[in-house]
Length: 130
Image 1: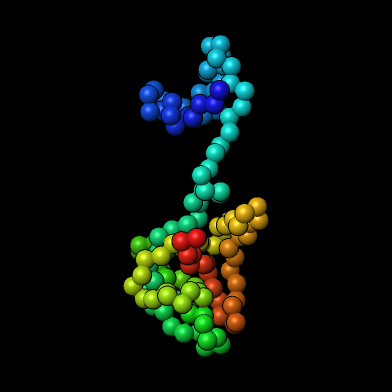
Image 2 (image 1 turned 180 degrees about the vertical axis):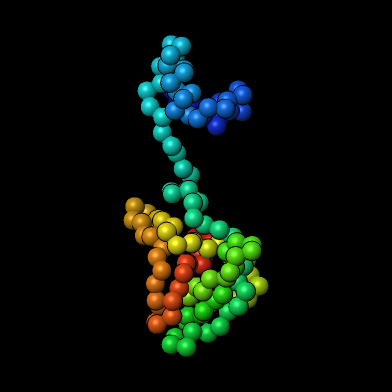
């Protein structure tokens, strides 16, 4: 039988992590075979933030790219992100994958890195809902 740790936490006052709870259950005779981390979204949402596009200018070397200044965290300096979305505009709140974020497409993954897109530095990726 599989039992969710989060489900157990709804009914019991658990302060220990899942591994410790599994060990404790086994020690009292309720054998736990394995503990698995299940994510409804592969990779979770680690590295994704809600950001605000402060400015959006056309890319000088492209007819469809934009150069944005994007505020990732309140109180920090905005970062420059090159974006290909035709609907990106100043003032929007968007999901942004920060440097080092791992994104998945099926079984394949890629890491967001500092890059140059047509000669302009980009420090992240503005994400679409899909």
